[in-house]
Image (cartoon, rainbow, N blue to C red; front, side):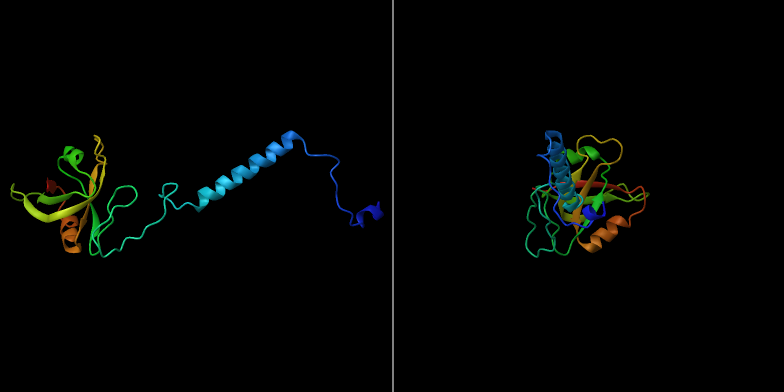
Length: 161
């Protein structure tokens, strides 16, 4: 027995692996490849797309999904409209005037942001749980004013041509 342990002869198969063994090895290889591909895909990135950077100094261009990039010098702000049904007519890339009626203030709306770029529309198909929002590209000063309004302020938009 000591002689067989000290030899360096290669291990030989007595025959080809069985069909089930080949199937198992192939299945494991495919699953490992799939797991590696999933782990290499960034979170929130649809398969087959590449990452894009936003910092363009030119006019906003459309990403592969059809949503415009954030123009230089602006920030993205989510806005909940007082009338969510208005979201049904909005599309990414549209320009809107953002109006606000502050809580406890006058009933007349004031213009908060003229010609704001619509980045995305979420929940336009009748979301009643409050998950609908309009994402706008606003200059930082207008974004601070929109976010700093008291709770209960109502927003509305006027679609521009």
